[in-house]
Length: 313
Image 1 (cartoon, rainbow, N blue to C red):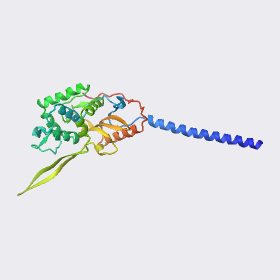
Image 2 (cartoon, rainbow, N blue to C red; image 1 turned 30 degrees about the horizontal axis):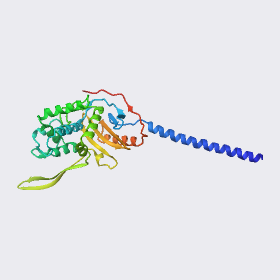
Image 3 (cartoon, rainbow, N blue to C red; image 1 turned 90 degrees about the vertical axis):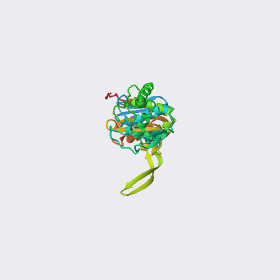
Image 4 (cartoon, one colour; image 1 turned 30 degrees about the vertical axis):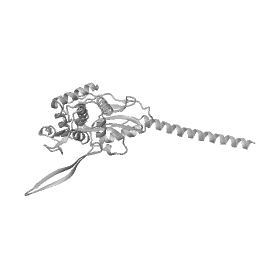
């Protein structure tokens, strides 16, 4: 009888010990998961906003009101103002010497004297970030380049982009400036009301078709035909792991590497703005870090905001 009581007591103690151990492991796993989920997202870009289009809230913000050059992100506004003009997309536009970049001396695959449709120039400006294409769109706007830039700034004010200034349609000037918070408004509006921009900016590549090339060598002249193809400056548009609804990159030394996107991640439509990334691939790394972060979220993540930093005008 005493032996039976001893065995029952011993088994009870062992069972309780296992239960406590199991509970401890479960609680430890839960605590680890909670800690991982609550850990702050570390990004390399100097100014960032991750915006939930459904709730209208910033899921993450880092220096969101810092005013900084935005480089070719400018071309999103260039595309919107061009489409707002309702100028014929099939109208032919000639590339002239006025479209040459004398500020940064960037190159171009669009020769002086070549003629393209307005639609082709839109594709080249948004997909390949072609500066001559963007400048030609502004130059041929009703009223000329000055009227085009005025329309860009008027549109920005109408969208509530209070810290945004445009001085040219290319973004080559460092005086084209904005904030991550303002650019969320720009991307949200472009995604909501400009299906052409959505379609064009998310294309992985674009071709102008076969182009005639004449090569003169001493007494012989040879004529070649080759496909003039361009790839999207955002390589994520060619990544099957991403569902991107709108995209634009930008770079000049003063702005660093920039990227804005609308994307669907973990059944959530978000806008990602990354400004002033130091390295060429940093903005892509940040975008992928944000994707993994959102995919690991529980759907109730709070805003993680840091104090804004003032920079320039």
